[in-house]
Image (cartoon, rainbow, N blue to C red; front, side):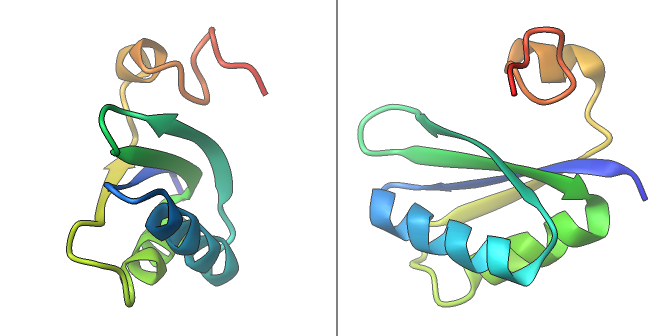
Length: 94
């Protein structure tokens, strides 16, 4: 199965932490990084195979406030990955 990235974002840090906990418990994914993206917006990036990331994002959304958004990125182009300093980019630090 192809590798995928999942993005969980919200305007409340504690909601992102709770969503990350649900995602990690529900699927075999790796929590990659957390970013403050302006104001109170927080984003968390996860990675794993497409099915696992989909399952994790579904779990993250369960019981979450309407301000929490999730996005699935499958087979991201390496140029996109490198721009955002994500896993697989030449700039990525584990």
